[in-house]
Amino acid sequence: MKTEKLKGKDLINVGIFSAIYFVIIMAIAMLGYIPIMMPLLCVIGPVLCGIPFMLFMTKVKKFGMILIMSIIMGIMMMLTGMGWYALVVGAVSGLIAELIYRGGKYASSKLAIVSYGVFSTWMWGNFLPLFFNPDGYFSTRQSFGQEYIESLTNLMPMWMCPTLLVTCFVFGVVGGLLGKALLKKHFKKAGIA
Image (cartoon, rainbow, N blue to C red):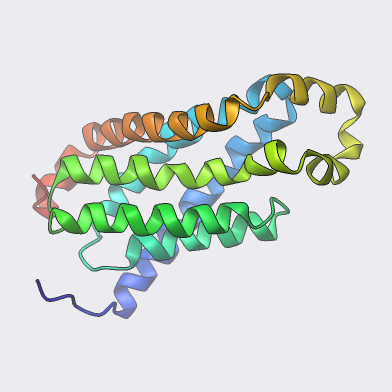
């Protein structure tokens, strides 16, 4: 299969959908100020962002578009103070998601959904400091108060680390199914079976 190079139109699509996706993620992230909502971000984010992401998938026909979007998400998380973890996880999950979707020649709705499930695991990178560097994580959140810190620490025992990873994938698939259902007409127009 010959891989075409990305053109300006492709990069514009990546930029537009990355911006839409990021705005939704930041709006959802505000729920994280409530400790009990923090682990639920791995449910709400992938489900709600499934709609714009699946619309994005109707535009993806060349290698690199999904990977670039995942790297952009990681960079944006770094710039908003979440650390570099999401960038590393996003680069890996974005590459795997890209390879999965390319495996169906950018025309399989089933692989688009699985690809989005994998892509969604970039969010898990935002939680890694809670498990592997809690002192560093909470040092930047002292203004939230000790009660917040204690509540979040109690909600996030070490077993939650792999649980959140699986949750991001599973609800990414749910979000992909929701997005595909709502955007059925766009999928047909794009020739994605």
